[in-house]
Length: 424
Image 1 (tube, rainbow, N blue to C red):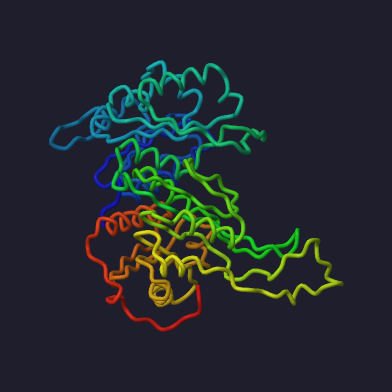
Image 2: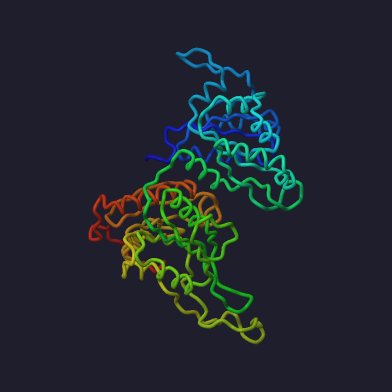
């Protein structure tokens, strides 16, 4: 199965900041997307993470010295940073420290990474991470501006708790944001240009009283990954998000909602005339019949006797009314994943169901990864296995683009039969 970075050589530069350990996860994500990752480390970076870790995960030795030589096979012995610079499809530096930014802006070549940047013509992505006063210092800002003017793509640091104990902007950006920048730098797929997609994400909250509510464990990360990647692939994306703590992707249209009723109204309104609706949200199936105006007291009204009513079945209504060309749903299951997913595909009259296993340490709402299967209305099944949410998003959008292109032709009458299950 093709992946977005197949046959692309990506050089991962790691500099000496506390966030260097996060580069291990970035390497893993890039490899999942098919990249052949080579690592170049500054001497300071080796104090935070040993080169052996990157060598074991990348399958290549780490370059950390400007005088490193590379056994070039038929080409003979080559200067390591020059050979790698000539084969690189992209270079991403994460974390990029203030010292690295200063040396890169000045064109210094006193270590392997600096020399490689001067020797390559591959696109450069930089993801800074440092103490917030260092990030806001005029010298750092000037160095960043110099690199951006030369063509580097900047992935701005996030705001939050820093290693110094302070809070401010300086944390390494989310891994998915850095991966997205690499894909963009390499001119990733643009197969959704001109398409309008509606993506729902996160949980809903159904109020019991001003303090309590019914909800679920959805983090919203899957929906956010889909929306962000769809925008990168050229789509006009509307993200309808329930309450989540993670930052939402930078999109032109984000509609925050809280309850299932609010998500229903927003989704049906935005779905009209859309090319595709992707229901990645975990919408509550039930809600209290009426929310109390003040906090309920256990002594006045037992909380185990709250009357519940069904919430609107958004996916079923989309399948029945077909306001968009392609309807996609998710089936989060703890067991019998394929059976439940096929049943949902039939009952909801969807074009595609992403059936994913939840409730395990490796795969679930709060994890980085998802164990997923794509179930098509024409009976096709694509097993993705345990992969990152970004990979699931990429494979899902591949399928949506294919369905919108009309190939192969779809027929719900060909969908496999399944045993009747409760609504999910």
